Image 1 (tube, rainbow, N blue to C red):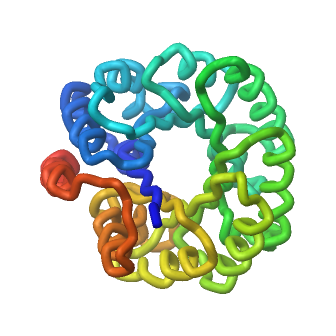
Image 2 (tube, rainbow, N blue to C red):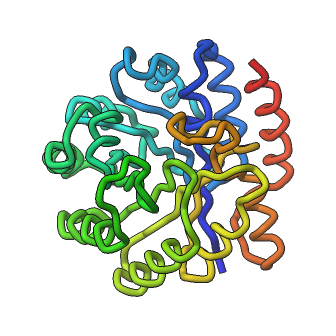
Length: 284
């Protein structure tokens, strides 16, 4: 059985205040391309004022050599203009839009309401229509809401249904603050995976480094076959109550898959090389 792993250097880099030189980004992300991940979430076409670290996304992605890899590249866009810029870059495959179940977080993250967010998605769909790019929705706060707002698995499922009805075939449920409970993980994936067999529904977990297993195992046991990670768990969400919460460590995902004799299509020697580069790059 093949498992899809998405490596997320964008998520790892974007919160670093010291600007990482473009050439270093290119070399690092190229090393990830060589691993043959299913997908790399590797840039953002958003305002440089919002995320200065990603201001060179177009140059970085255009400089990558994909000729010897099956890896597809994903970027974040927050509106139609970002989608237009992303569609101009040949190497981009997926345009990801962050949509939050939480109204407060949607405003914080995209300066728009949930209703406005849905309208932005419709405009993005018009931009990608007729191109070889695919829309991707990240459902933030997909496993809980820290703001005291209404939240339920039914709400999440309703938004998933709404986006699928719009023609979107790629969706990630995001554990934005690293607080996902096993019962909610099980409920969501056990309902959604069999209900939408033609839709790719993945897990973007945040976690403390040594608390990753229950989330991954529960998602896997309930049908999830697509997981996001970042080497060493770098990055994550600054809104988490714990400084120890970061991205799902990719090396832990690989360990999990190996223990279950699951295939990922990855070159593990190339991963070791990329892992070592990450240790140097993120020691800023």
